[in-house]
Every structure is written in structure tokens, then in C-alpha cells.
Image 1 (tube, rainbow, N blue to C red):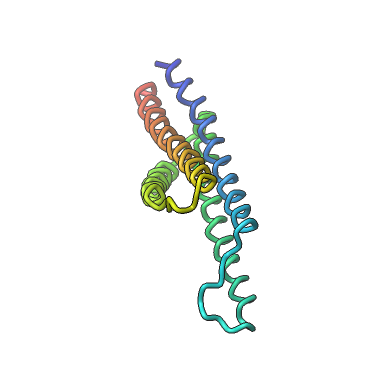
Image 2 (image 1 turned 30 degrees about the horizontal axis):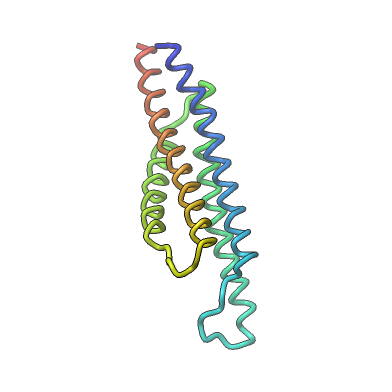
Amino acid sequence: METELRRRRINLLTLGAGVIAFGVWSMLKTYLYMIVDPIPMEFDVPEQFQKPALIIAYAMVTVFLLIDLELRLYVGLSARAEGLGKKKGKAYIIVTALMLIVNIAAWIVYLFMYNYKDGHEALMDYVVSLVVDLTSNVILAQLLYNAILVRRMSRELEG
């Protein structure tokens, strides 16, 4: 059982790093999309307010991305700490479960959003995004599973 616990802790180290890496990738991907395809001004906004409205829109996107990155850092670093044998609270496991639920719901919504009129390149971009997001969800699910197992095994070994 100690060997299995050690293996699960190593998994937590690796999966924690993966959660952090996907958080950085998510941020980078969003900024790359915003550079390639800027936020359109689809509302009737007077000329003098268009630039401030765009700045506010980009600032809001940045705030949401930073919140997502902060949550991923918290989960990833907590999983890595627990993988090293440090005691961590239950909060990061709860946050992981909530993130997984939200991400799966978003993935399902995105799954049905493809517009077939956009062509082959858009299809490839869509499929790649689906696969990358699915991979992120699998990493979160594995982290959740391993964190629960590490907790259970640690309790059993402590007696």
C-alpha cells in the first residue's frame, strides 16, 4: 500500500504541474485570439466611447483570466504540496471539483457551437480546441481522483 501511495503522490505532483500549465496556456490562447480576432464593437457606441469600451472589455477578460489562473495555481500548487507529503485542507479538492464541473459544462456548450459554414481551417481550430480542453478536463478529473485516493490511503496507513 505504501508503494501505491507513493505512486499516487507522484501523480499529484505531475497533475498539479499540468493544471498550472493549462492555466497559463488558457491565458496565452485567449490573448492570441484577441490579437488575431479583436473584440468587435457590435453595439451602437458613440465614437468617443468606443476606445474606452474596448479597454474595459479587455480589462474584464483579463480579470476573468487572472481569476482562472489564480484558481489553477491554487489547485496545482496544493496538489504538488500534498504530493510531497504536506498536509493540505479539503478546499483545493472542492475547488478542483467545482472547476471540473464548470469546465465540463463549458466544453459541452462549446461542442455544439461549431458553425459548419466557417470552412476547413475553422473546423481544425475547433477540433484542436475541443481536444485541448478535453485534456485539461481529464487532468482535473485525474487530480481529483488521485487527491481523494491519497487522502484515503494516508488515513489507512496512519491507523
